[in-house]
Image (cartoon, rainbow, N blue to C red; front, side, top):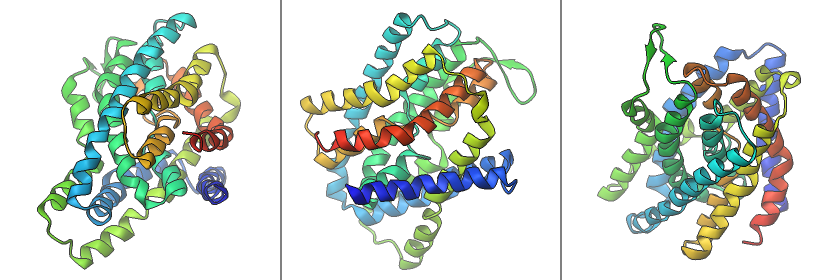
Length: 318
């Protein structure tokens, strides 16, 4: 446990490096965009490919994939819980779609993957990816649709109002990171050994995932502007959803559905991550409440520093 704390400290130290270098003007907003593209389009696909092909046998993977029912059920239940809480807190109707999406979906890659690797090592990656599949699919389909409902139209690159389409969400689901995962699965199922040169190349490129991801978070927090963050009851509701209700749902589901112990713990940690980085961008695109989503991102990321020791303590009891 002590080692896990030190590992997590190292992860957040990288986030503070990103924050500090933004303050020193080494990084700007465009740097975060570039790093995001590098992680999602290059480093993460290779990280997924090499982990799937090197850490699991075909039999082990086929046994693993059935566990995806747990995150799927947890997100469905969390979504309905968000609807109830939005009513109880009297969240503004123009915020409820964004509220429910942030309440339900977590940051499974930029924060989730590094934190899980810090706690469990590389053996956690396949379980992280299982949760990632469910989370990403929900976020880029139903979640984005709910954000779009906060404002019925959005403005595209040509400034022409457009309607949200399901295909837009599906294209986001089938991103390079997911394709890297799929290619890794297909290669694993063939039983063909990965050439050593490809293993080495994938390992080097994949190792960029954690530092670049944490730099992105640090840059994002810096440019949010800590002094501009305003706490309100809707943000408190999202904090409850991310750090209390969602992980509690995982615990309850895994009391009914039996899955391996490490899978339970990884899902528990994944379910309690801050909100997705993409939410403020989508809120701006769909003419939803940008200030609300931006402030919530800042609060969930900063709060996680205080929450993670509690989560690790609870994790030991499940």
